[in-house]
Length: 202
Image (cartoon, rainbow, N blue to C red; front, side, top):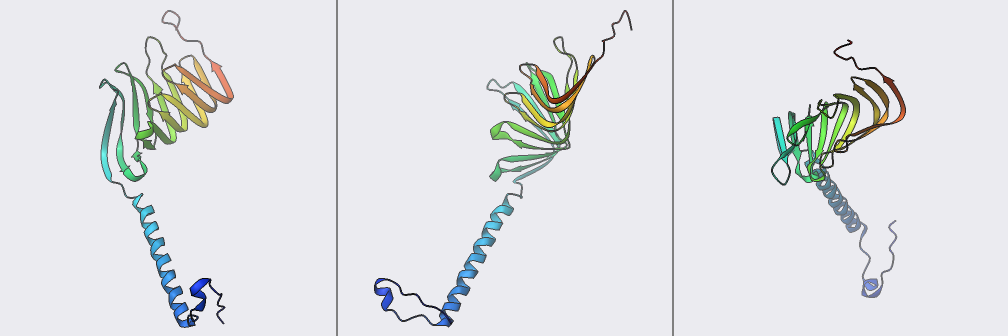
């Protein structure tokens, strides 16, 4: 049996609503809740529909002077405007310094946040620093690497291996600053040095 609670003021003098009307009102309320849930679900689904879907893409990013600072390319790029993401398949990131290729990073997939100047490389990630007069060639093998493209800071919490002609290092976690030319492995680091061969004494 329905229990009616008194209301304050003029409402208390109204005759109680019949059970049939109460059930109908409840049905309408549930219908409205269902419609709201569907509408909210529709908004969530909209986030999974890309506003742009490109196969074989290349993005060139420049500084204020119009100089290319990095290039992002890959097999496919989907852009989701509502959440500010670009999702890439088989991405390859090239970091340039003074117009010269400095670093190359690649992975099976990535999520790019252009407004935050951040690239999340997903899965096994390989980095290659090109040899120069100041730096030896450096190879990095890691996973799930975050690159801040504006500050050139690079992070990973995964096991990371760094290989140079005279050095082999492995450890858990990595921090690198490409501008400061710093590469650090954080924990459980193992280092093996190898003397570099000279042209006179191979």
